[in-house]
Length: 498
Image (cartoon, rainbow, N blue to C red; front, side, top):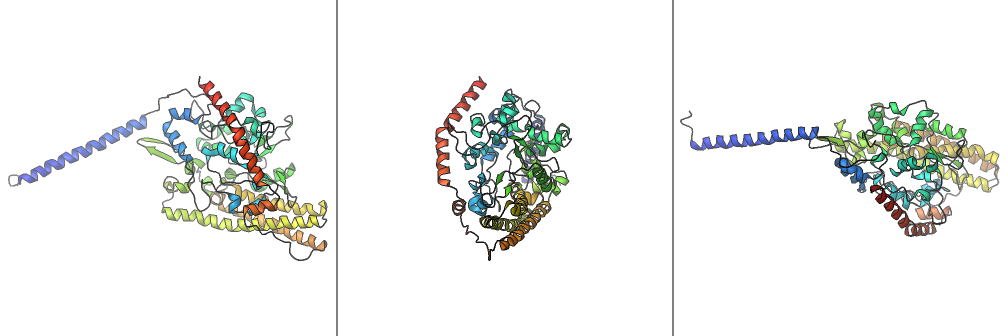
C-alpha cells in the first residue's frame, strides 16, 4: 500500500504533521505562559503609605485593578430603572419635590453616577449649599464621610471628633480624591479593611467584633460602611456641636427596628413644610435590605455581583469596575444562573415592575395626606388633634423612602421590600381616614384640592423654592472657591510626594 501511495499524499501528510506540531506548540506555550502568569506576583513599584488617598499611587502596584476601576468613569449605562447615568429624579417624578418639601432633596436629587464622580457630584449638588469665604454653607462636614479615601486619612490626622466638627466646606480642600483603594484595603497586606468608625461602632453596640468577620463577609461589609441607613447624632455625651455619623441598628436591621430607634430618641431629620409632620429621611439601606434577600441567605456577597472576578491571561482578580449586574450578566448572574441573558434581565424587571406599582401608589397617598394635613392646620386644628395623624404620615413615608432610597431593593429582597411598602400603604390610609374625620369636624366638605404637579419646576414653585437663586449661588461658589480648594489640595499632594 505504501509503495502505491501517490507523492501528493505524502506531502499532505507531511504538511498536516507540521500544522499539528505548530498548533501543539502554541497550546503548550500558552499553557506555560498562563501558569507563569498565575504564579506571578506584582513587584511593588512604589511604597504605599497606610493612609495614601490617591488611587493613581495604588495603581502603580496594581495596574489591572486600577484600570478596571477607572471604567467607572463611564456613566452611560441605563437599565429600565436608573443605572449609572445622570438622571434628574425630580424631573422624572415631580411628586418627590412635595414628599421632600422643606428638605434638601426637594432642591436637587440626581441618580448617582458612581464612585468615580463622588467628589464632583457632591460639590455640584444644590443640597450641599453654596458656601462662600465668609459662610460655610448649611451642611456639616460629616456629609463627606462616604465620598473619599481622604476621609480616613483626615480622621487619622485630626481625630474622628474633629473631623465631624464644622461645616461641609471646612473640609473641601482636604477631601479631593474620589472613592477608591484606601477606602477598602490595607496598604500593606491588601486585605479588606473597615476604614469608617460608624460601622465598627454599630457592631460593638450589637455585641459583635467586626474583626472576626470572614473574608466573604468582608466582601459585603466594606460596602456596608456607606450603603446603609445612617443619621447624624448631635446628642452624644461629651460631643457637643459634633454631627456624629451613627447607624441606627441597636434594635435590629429591619425598617421597624430602626424606626423604633428613632422614635425612642424623638429624632427627625426635618419637619415637613406642608403637613408639619416630623420626618425621617431614609439614606440608602442597601445592606440592611440585602441581608433579608435570598442571595445573602445563600452566602452571596455584594462583590460577587457588583465586582465579579475577571481573568486576564492566567491572572484572576476582582473587577473594580463597580457596576450594576445587568451591565455584565455573564460574569455576575450567569456564574450561578444558567438561564439566557434576556430571561434573567426580564426576571429582574418583573420584580421591579411589581414593587414600583405599589410604591407609586404609596407616593400618591402620601402626597394627598400632606395636603389634607395642611388643610386641617389651615382650619385651626390643634397639636393634640394632629399628633397621631402626623405619626402615621411619618411611618408611611419612612417605609416608602426605605424602599425607594435603597439601590436595587426591589431586586435584592422583593419580598421584604413589598412587605415594607404594604405597611406604608396601611399607615398612609390610616392617616387619610383620620384626616377625613377631622376635616368633617372642622366643617370641611368635599375633597381637598390636589395640586396639579406636572413638572419639577411647578412643584418647586408650589412649595416656595427659588431654584434660580440657588443655582446662581452655587455657580458663584464653584467659580470663587473651588479653584482655591483644588490649588491647596495640589500643593499638599506635591509636598507629600517630596
